[in-house]
Image 1 (cartoon, rainbow, N blue to C red):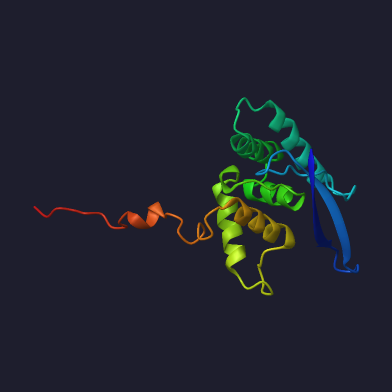
Image 2: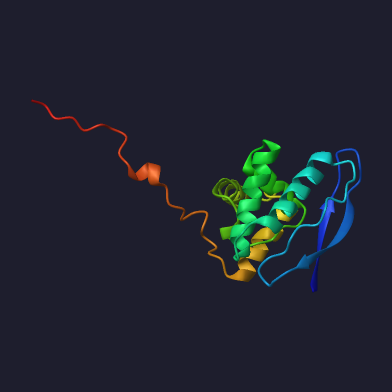
Length: 164
């Protein structure tokens, strides 16, 4: 099993920033599964992580991207939370996978955050930037967030009526 080391900065408002080095298990060249949250007091993060990892084992599919997508949606349903928030939690724990493995709502929010100024409000955090680098290394479309199809915009918003 190959190990990939990623350095991230982690801290709270009243604490100084500290450098944290975590090692993620790469199960393939395309996917890195998350590690359990380092903070033992993070109860909801640990519950999301455990629910995701348990479901990942049980999904009856051979494609790992589909397994991850299904496990993310399952964890969101069990936790009664938004699927994008569950995905953000697991990406912060180290989940790295192709765009296909993530729900559309998360991809919309991630693309919007990655397009913002890095120093501005609502910008991407270190984990999301690392995920973007992972997508770039896989050869994913760099402009996928901009070229997304909007079916709602293609449909007319007016009703055509005939006059007798």
